[in-house]
Image (cartoon, rainbow, N blue to C red):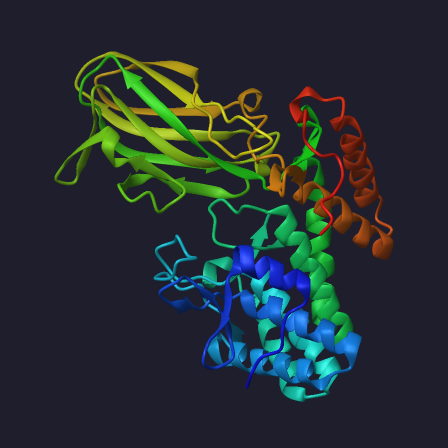
Length: 426
């Protein structure tokens, strides 16, 4: 079957970014030049495009093409705890993790487009597929799923992060898709689920507010580096943990590949069999901090053994914000100077918020053509407006209005000099 052309919009995006090329079974893969490989979310983009064209033109070739892509996507999904999931494989170019995972956002999108295809064709298999995909969103993270049960309520995890990332755009988009799925299929369980998620998100909105930058935050977490420097030689590092109140405690191990959010930089320490020692009287730790616990602070906890007395300085790189990039900071700030005793030592240092204004990166600007536009801040506003119109929840109204005023201030804010203050229009 020769697949129909895309809309001009998807064709343009595909040419410059997605590089879509159909595989033998009709699934839209990504053309890497020497090979065409599967990208789980591409099926969503193409089904949406063909359904849009079918609705507009009534030409059945688009509906037939949408079904072919959907059938290929369903076939490529795997059964997981009585649901269907589209795995991001660990050996693929799109998965930097060392294990397979599935995305709450991708699954939500498929629940929506399968439901829309059911509404268009009246074929029950698409309604059933939509239900199975939706059900995957309720599997808890600790059982391999994407439903993160926090002390403040449930949330949908876009991709695995420890602590949970709470990526605002992805979470809002997932909730929107689940609502559309629920409305089409009249799934009361899904209606309850998206309402519970929206309530959690609404309670967390103050944490996404970044008045220091007249902006909203893309996420609640972010990586930084902690450095210890001692006057004593060869400290034996026994256990190192990061504690994020309400989210959990995370152990740091030596990692040369840097696959995890939390690790001891292998180049900064000396390993002797199973023991780890400081190198040149220092060591570096990578940690992923979270605003989720605010106003409670994140804290680093270190157990070590010393053969001498002395002092240990603990410093942290202060995250910085740049509107055009997400470059990490470079400057260390001293947080504490701690006396060292001979033998076992245990230290616990709070990581103060005064140095973490830029943690949970405020939304950045992308170069689109010759101009720089902010994409995600406007998505945040539009999604909040979408849900306020449905729920009339004043928590949503407060921040959509506040974030609109930030946009009004950008033209007079030196931080955003030369950047666009209106949404990008394709």
